Image (cartoon, one colour):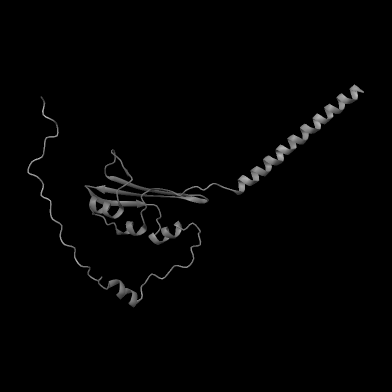
Length: 183
C-alpha cells in the first residue's frame, strides 16, 4: 500500500508540474501579444538645419558668406581642414515612418559662393505637410475678421484719467561705508 501511495504522489507531483509549466507558457504568450499591441510613445527627433528648395533656389554664385548664412542659417558642420565648405545636414526620425535625411553642401572660393550640392529637397509646404502625423484636426477655421469686429478692435480705447505723477526720490550724494571702520 505504501508503494501505491508513493506512486500516486509522484504522478500527482509530475502532473502538477506539467500544468504549472503549461500555464506559464500561456501567460507568457498572452503577455507577448499584449505587449505587441501596446507600443510606447517615441518622440519625433529633429536634428540639424532644415533647408528648403526655395532657400537653395535663392542662392546665387558670387554671394558672400554672410549672404549665404542669412539665407540658409548657420551651418551644422564647418571643417577646419576644408574652410571653403559648409555642410547643412538634416535628419527627421518619427516612429513608424522612414527616417528623412538630407544634406546640402555649399562651396566657397575666395569667400564667395562657388557652387551648391544638394540632395532632392522638399518645398516648405511639402515639408510642413510631412510633419502632419495623421492626426485628424478637423476643419481649419477661417482666419479673417468681419468688418464690424475689425472696427471694434481698432477703435481707440477710452482714455482713463491720468494718475498724478509720483514724486521722484533723489538719491543721496554719498552712501555710508559698507564696512565698519577698523578700531
